[in-house]
Image (tube, rainbow over all chains, first blue to last red; front, side):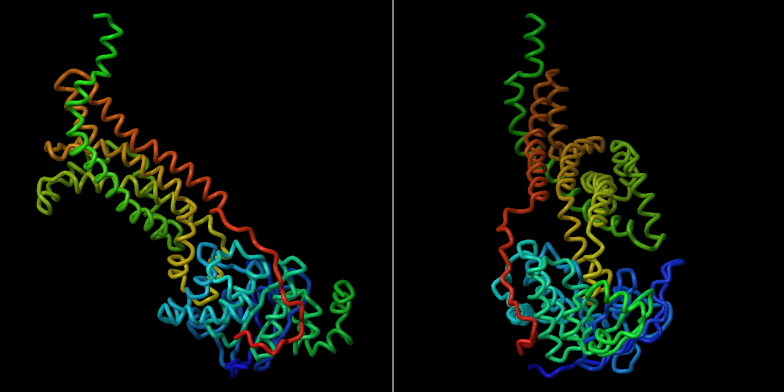
Length: 245
Length: 256
C-alpha cells in the first residue's frame, strides 16, 4: 500500500444562498486524516453543494473549510483543486479525448509531466481500476461503470490528498454499481481521506468511519455508522432511514 | 440564325470557353482559392476571439463583440469590401504596396469573422456545463478549461456550419474585383467577366460559374456527410457488457 499523504478535513459553519434560496445554513463536517465520511440525506438537502464548497467550485458566503487545520479559502482555487480529487454523478469525462488522454491531460498541462511519464502514470492508474485494456477507447465506448472508474483514475492520477464523490453510482445501472463501490472501498481502506455523498446505505454502513445526515442545509446528526443507523436520535433522520432502508 | 441557337451560343460557345480555360486554371483558380482559404483562416481566428468575448462575463468584452457582429453581418459584403479595400488603401500602400489582396482578404475575413463568431459561440454554449465543472475540478483555470476541453468540443459540433461559411467565402471572394486587379491578380469571376466583356459572349463567365460549382457543390455534400457523422458519431464498437468485481469488501489493492 502506498504511504498516504491524506489530510484531515473540517467544514465549519458553511453558509450559502442562491438568491433567496438558502442552500447551506451552517453546515459542519469533520473527517479525520485517512477517514471516510458518507453524507446522506434527502435530495435538495445541500449535499452536493456542500461537496462543491470543499474544493471551492462554489464559494461559500460564510464559514470555513480546513485541510489539516489550515483554511483553504486563502489558497489559489485552481491549485487547491489539484489537491482535491472529485468524481461526479455523470462522470464528466471528456468525450473528445481517449480514455488515456482524459487522464494525461491534467498530468501534462498542470503537473507538467512529459508525455512518457504522463502515459506511464495514466496506464498504471487505469490498471488499478481494472481498465488497462481500455486506454485507447473513447468514453462513449465504455459502460457507465467503466466510465466512472476512468473518472476515478483520472482524479487519482493527480495524487490528491482528499477525494470527493458526488453520488458516484447514482447514474449507473444496478449491476454496475458494485464495481465502482469496490474501487471506492479499496481507496478508503488505503487511507484516502474521502467525503462520499451517496444513497448507497450499505456502502455507508460498511465503509464509512463517519456518517453525516444532512437536511435543509445543515448536518443534523453525524457519528459512526453503527450509531447513525442503529440508534438515530433526530426524528428527521429516523423518518429518512425508515424510507430508504 | 434562329433565336434559340443564338441563345445557346451566348452561353455555350465551346470556342470561347476553350480560350478562357487555361487562364482560369492557372490564374483564376489559384487566386480564388488563395483569397478564400486565407480569409477562412484569418476569419476563424478572429471569429474565435469574438466568440470567447461574446460569452465573457465582462461586458467590456461582450458589448464590443455584439456591436462588431451586428455591424459586419448587417452591411452588404460589397460595401464592406469597398470601404476597407479603398478606404485603407493609402495605409496599405505604405505597408505592402499596391497589391489589393491583403485588404481584400482582410475585408473578407472581417465579414466571415462576424458569422463564424456566432457559429463558434453557439458551439461553445452547446457544450454541457458539467464539462467545464469536470475540467475546473481537476485544477484547470477557466481559460485552460475553455482552450483544452470546451472549445475543442464546441468547434467539432459546428464544423458543418464552418464549412458552409467556407462556401460563402469562395463565392464572396469574387467581390474583390471591385478593388482593381492586375491581370495576374484576377480570380475566376474577373477572368470570366473580362472574356465576356471583350467578346460579348457569356460563355467564359458561365465557365467561371462552373468552376465555382466545382468547388462549392462537393463542399455542400461534405457538409451533409460531416453533419450525419457528427450526429450519429463515428462508427464505433458498442459498449461491451461490463464485468465488474462483485465484491464490496476491500480487496487490499490500493487504487492509488
